[in-house]
Image 1 (cartoon, helix red, strand yellow):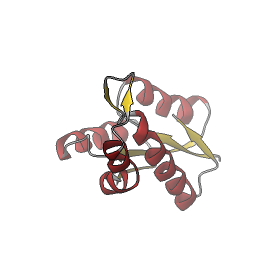
Image 2 (tube, rainbow, N blue to C red):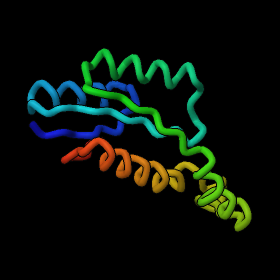
Image 3 (cartoon, one colour):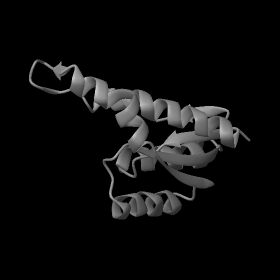
Image 4 (tube, rainbow, N blue to C red):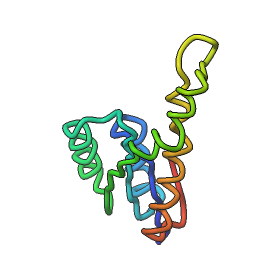
Length: 116
């Protein structure tokens, strides 16, 4: 059976994906959420609960808040990097931190596929 790691927000789209990958495609589904500082403990608990309701094989929450600041945001702030010359570049800048965390977790669990 193929093992897939699904980047999971707990919303409609990724909840549908979890069930589709498991039921329709017969894959072993594992979910992960990467917290870069935007989720409270209650929100992370709700995401984990939603993952369990989708009958996934496992769910993980990975905290990368410190890494986002030390490797990305402090440079964006120091350089006054603005998106559309208007607001600080932060949301899109965090994607690389999330992608690296997801790839590392995929290796850890031996996933053969990634999905989002």
